[in-house]
Length: 344
Image 1 (tube, rainbow, N blue to C red):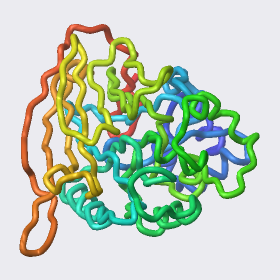
Image 2 (cartoon, rainbow, N blue to C red):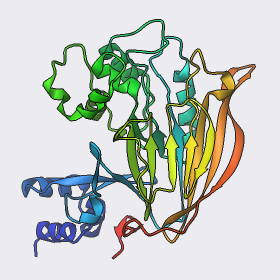
Image 3 (cartoon, helix red, strand yellow):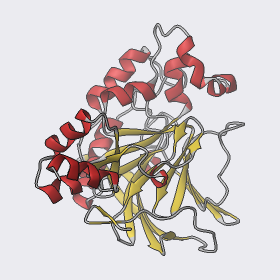
Image 4 (cartoon, one colour):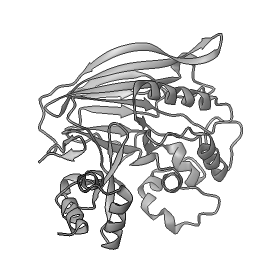
């Protein structure tokens, strides 16, 4: 059998691009050329260590979770380990005229690099948008270009985000109404002069940003999943059945609430807006620990802005262990990897 045929057979059996190439001693570029020549589409898969691989698109339904709102669910694939660590930020209002969070983001990336963290969960209001307290409102295209030019970039750090109401306002040019959210799929029918679809723009210009949806998104970890939520909305603010951990933005406060089997963590903003005190400017690290593929507990570290002789610095302020109830049904069959190989 020719090497090309062997490669295609391995891919169709569920091997990833890198694994199939390594097994046949060919380069990834050669593998991609074979797939392209045979008109075979692939989809990217992202691992907890920040590496990216590819599988044949729609090879296995396990890789394509059910659709949820306007975007699909996403999975971060983990090797057979019992923990996963990420950073959480929210409500940066990055283009606010009085905001200094560009330097705070540099500190976030520095902490990520030192801690070996490759994923940042962003709970919305990335930009300040077209309403709010800012004294100067930049045009949508100017806000996007500022974000594009000043937001840090690391090819091994991924930003998983949901759009907040301020992000959506780059398209609506005002505070979004319920009808704007409900008709988001049809917004292409509107004249786009002076508007920016932030989700589409980030998709086109930043390969380190992955959208989980409008106001509400789902992220799978092993057999389990968590939700990211922004402001309440009549159809998009519901907590999914079986979800035991929810991260909430929009409220600009730090609080952990437990309601039945669900724990909700309200996240303080990463931005020194006019109405936010210095000690409320925050970022978090979360380490998810698993048992039988389910989230057992989460170790939280809460960093807050503290003023030092060298200026504002994000320093560790609080550690907390969040225990989750394990009495729940398995959400889906776990897809596990060992050294990037699919384990049958």
